[in-house]
Image (tube, rainbow, N blue to C red):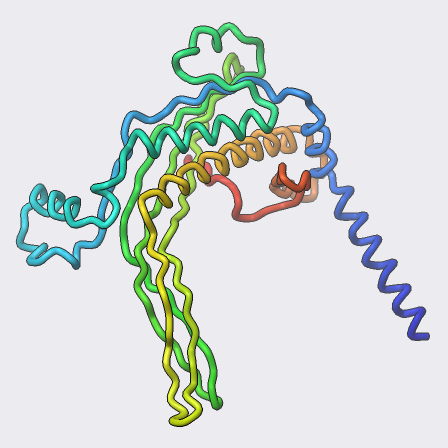
Length: 278
């Protein structure tokens, strides 16, 4: 009897997995992935990055300063902002984005090849990185553990750098003639390695930790990571537009699908995607 229940459970799981693998969204997405080429894409870089240090509490008498003096003080007292190069960050962001687009099946172009790009056949897309913003701030993190039935917790402030990206995507020679504004943000921070330790002699509990501080080079590498990530997000966006176009189920909206190139897997996602700015 026990073996029969196990067999039934295995059958149920197998049927469930089969149903998941045969969703209409996945079928359309698989056809989308079969294309040898996804078209051409022109990526336009931003001229500058807007940088802000939000650590106002670190500036003495900040509320009494005029805006220019306050902004200047925040900049020259920043941990990262004053040392970051716009051009280096943008270069790493764009180069990794172009490389990932190529890996996804796009022919890639930059502004200097605009005339060549316009002579290409469809489908072709223009992706304008219309605005990048970087914000430096502190973020409070909490660690917690239990000893002798009591909860112990500690709050630690870590340095964070948040990147806000606005990308305008348009299809060349499209009847819609519409730009979609795509937005997302991610942050990187100091890494904290810590643990609570109970003294065997006194039963006191102490927290011991070390901080791996965020560095400027880490921020540049984070920019490169985001460039590749957002190329993936653009690919997902185009794939899901095709899913919407072909989706025939009238009782529900299609799930948003993500393609993981490294694992060659398709699966639905809720958050790993752009927000469309209306």
